[in-house]
Length: 132
Image 1 (cartoon, one colour):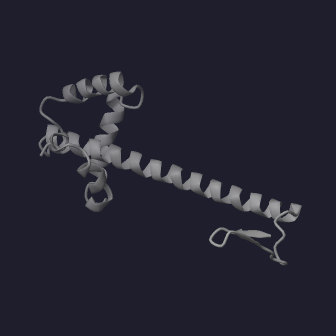
Image 2 (cartoon, rainbow, N blue to C red):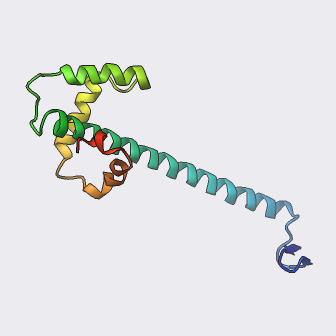
């Protein structure tokens, strides 16, 4: 039996008896499959956003702090200071070596990653964060 909400009446469906164990097992399997698929998509999206964030940090270091040069004249001082501040604010993951990896990642892929991929991420941040 199924409930037709619009007409507020019970409809008998001879082909689908929702009270059977077999139907409930199939429903549970389908729902579990959907949940696993959604979780996998969420993980993929988080990974993409994290990747684009690291790319954007590397871009900022090169284009803003280093004025487009592969290395700034003042060496790693800016990266070290930035690392110290980010680690105090966010904890692990923003060591000086990680920030240098972000910079290298940007330099390696700056002509391969389409601007559309990360423009939405950057456009949602205040302009002063972009160095514009």
